[in-house]
Length: 330
Ligand code: HEM
Image (tube, rainbow, N blue to C red; front, side, top):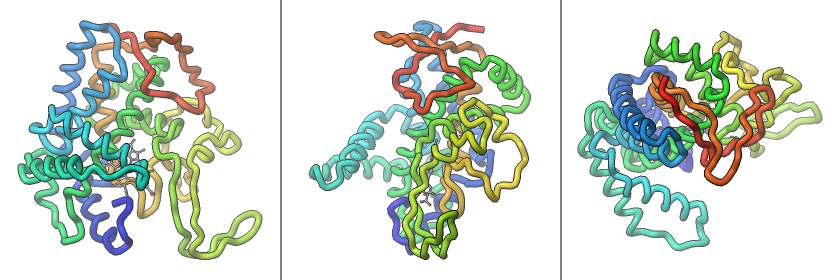
């Protein structure tokens, strides 16, 4: 999808929007998504009761089980080979022409995706894709790999949101009450994940070509100018946003005129992220389930000591990979 020609995009974008249900806070599959999350977080809880520490490794393993089930179906739960192949193919693709293609691995990966698409498990995105109109250019088996790798940034965003909530006990208490009252529609947890990607965008660069002449403070740019939008520049602009460096979920909970809204972690306009709602639903439900009967507090790493996050002056970067939490039963 991302690298599609304008013509192919016309057919692929609607397919993406229909299956991912962009613009719909609660996906039609919300019930099965919740079931998957409840089961997988229950399994993670068992592990946490024993270790009392949540590491990135344990969280990410659970996240991927959830993602494989939501996208490809329950049959894909333990298909770690698929995720491994995806990660390796991505790493090679990032080096582009510098390393030879691994055709065998790509074929194995695509064959596995095709298998799950043929199976079309009800309640999964693969099941929904089977009932969504396609054209010769849509090629669902080529869309799913992008959806899978895009879910990767969802795990970073969720773990960083947990880092914020672990320090902000007041927001956590309100979020818990909200989750009890309105699960799975949880605006505060959703806003906390949005804050995570505002503060630490997982896609900090948006590329565009202008379609008309644009006027700037210091002159005009002609049609067809390539633009690079560096989102942290807007998200952390303390001259226009007083909350720029604070954890401020309320930014996402107010009714506002969106015309000049400068916070675009999921981009904006006709090319905005079509996975926005499904990933926000997944991330907020994962947080709700985790926080339900456990408290999380920042823990030191195995070799490093951590400074607790200062919610009034948040750092410009936050590695999810080295974050750890001490877990206690409530
Ligand atoms: C925290 C998680 C995510 C963030 C912050 C995010 C953000 C973004 C951003 C900024 C873009 C670029 C849009 C543009 O060029 O204007 C994008 C594109 C896209 N995202 Fe996401 N995304 C996330 C997760 C997902 C997920 C889970 C899916 C699918 C299930 C997804 C599907 C896509 C697709 C298909 C595109 C290409 C859209 C197009 O070219 O028209 N994303 N995303």
